Image (cartoon, rainbow, N blue to C red; front, side, top):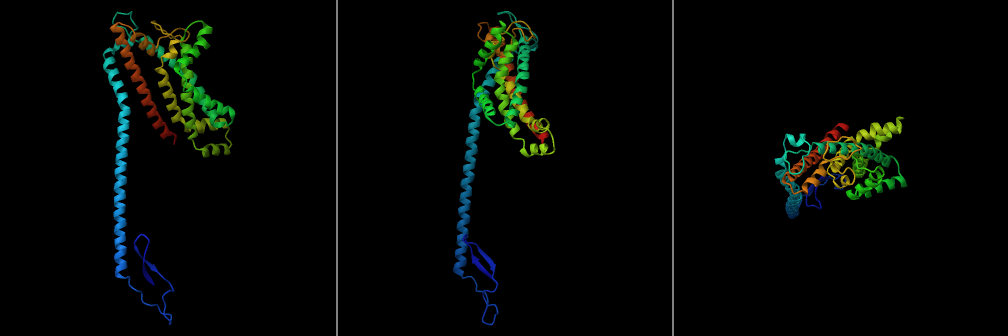
Amino acid sequence: MTTLRTTDTGDVVAETVYGALRGPSGDLLPAESLPAHLAAGAAARRATIRNSARRSLARRRAATRLSHALCGLAAGVCLVPLLALLAYTTSRGIHAINLGFFAHDPTPPGIPGGGIRNAIAGSALIVGVAALMAIPVGIAAALFLLERKGRLAVAVRFGADVLSGVPSIAMGIFAYEVLVEPLRHFSALAGSFALAVLMLPIVIRPSESAMLAVPLDLREAALALGARRSRVARSVVLRGAIAGLVTGSLLAVARAVGETAPLLFTSIGTQLFNLSPLQPTSAMPLVIYADGTQAFPEAQQIAWGTAFVLLALVLLLSIAARIASGRLAGRSR
């Protein structure tokens, strides 16, 4: 038979009871109706619980809106220095931007009309050679850390973490002692070496994280099918982690392209157009450092224009890293 029962939450539910309420002859006895005071108490309890739930939901929604507002305020505060830097550099450097600024070489101090053609070519040469040095080595080191466990892997990981905190000027001094002092002259190659050492930890750590994100089941399945570890690393691990690898590499390039201190001890800069890696070479950070400290307004204008170009380049590299990460991640799936 069906009876009514009040639950712990105050709800009244119907239950079917078999063989419980029978008379002496075995016939079912009529069900008793729920007393009026019990039904009223259950309804009151349900209303109380419902009102408490509404108040709790309102408090949670208010707390959520407050936390969102605080997070937005914190993000806005963090963006203020960046926006101020962009606005100030743009207002000071945009006036120097023209076709001759990119197509002409520097002029002597006090003579207007100079450009940064040699600095753009020198930055491309130095950073390009540094990327060729650092990115393959960094990805190979990340792959080693993924495949191998032990003291050597722990030492490599610890060295990468320590190297990421070393000041850039120390990298310049190190490159000076390794290449400039033995060769007895400054060169773009020495600058590339200093920037490559600076880029290594930026490539290793994101690359390792991207490789760890590749499911272990995919690697084990490839090995179970008889594929060699080199083929698994090339076709499974690197292909699955391509988005993180590209992002880490672009961020490392964006970090290296704006470094000044390592180049002061290595490539030292020149007023001539040079594409030889074995000769002193100019770069955009060196132009900003050299012209920004001069008393000539023309030189200072060149420095502000170069700073604007360099800031725009770093911003574009960062945006490219985010876009490439999203698109490559979608393709790798």
